[in-house]
Image (tube, rainbow, N blue to C red):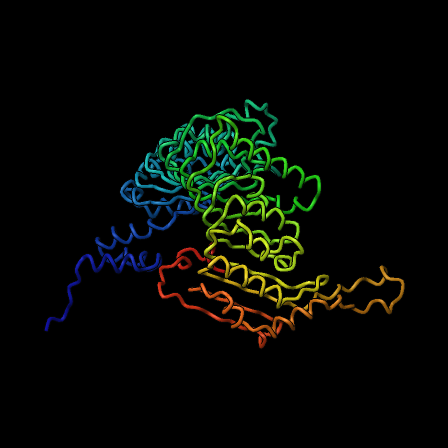
Length: 494
């Protein structure tokens, strides 16, 4: 029997790619094969420059022939803004040889491009980039985008500037703002761009008709745009399949003046879609994820197959929810909220589900928090009404978590706020919530699930303040490929 075992190079290569960075660094010292292959493995992980010393560590690692190893870098991340001239010059050459670099992240966009202009020029000259993310973008970022030679597939730009958006900090005429709208600004990538994340990308309330069309755009995220106009996106991204929006409008909807402004903007967006010569609406929007108020003000008139709302729904949202769902008519809906979801006098979820807005509904993910200090609810009748509404929709898939909590005590106040020391004792809120808790504990969970005979995939949970009162029932699907395993944020309660 031989005393040594010869390992195939493919096996050795697999050992390297299964090892962590520290192990690979040690393997580099063993032989020429490991010297080359382990270096590739290390550089396959993101190269992150957070401190000045990281630059020199990287340059030393590249060795006497930096261009040979530099070409294996796949992702580059700049978290710093300033470098010495010597450090910048040391990086210029390696960057110019990163002909396989696919992803670039710059945390301090304009500051980095201002203090490290030669590195910005080297990065702009690359042709291999496919994904770009820049935070704190401003004017120099625009210049960088104009010079960039890569065919980008995914882009994320955050225009935060000081305490607001760069656009807000610079007073511009409407015609000047229009040129910075994502559609014209990124037009050089109209044939390649598939995903766009816009953050703090404020724009004017009046826009010209943009003619650029992005046929491959599939995913659009709009964060903290105050009042976005939807028709420029519909016209430019006709094949969009996923839309996400996240702003502060969920808070603003509490105030009458802001709520009126949101309603007016919704009406404007609807009218622009339905206008003669307008773009109409999206034909194949498969998914919306984000704030409810944003979905409302966007005024989409198209159907949306899957909706996941990140808003904690209250009675302020429910009438508007009914309006939104009448257009969207989703097949899958995910939402969570307080007791009003089950107990609203006119627009409870069971009432909404009985209407035409839920005619296509097949899957529901619902979390209801029954903690209440003010509202008394017949929880048994409310859940029976929910089961009855879902049974009429032939619901196949359900994730339901109903949580009952003890009412919160009022906080202890400092003595100087009170007239008498005896009032310092902590007082309990009215215990109408306790009735809900006990009713939930007594509810027959099996009878609830039996009231929805169409279910083929379900997890129903009733949770009480005491773990001993928690109950769960499941229906395990016969076909594990049903929705749920691939995107838990859409199909499960996290």
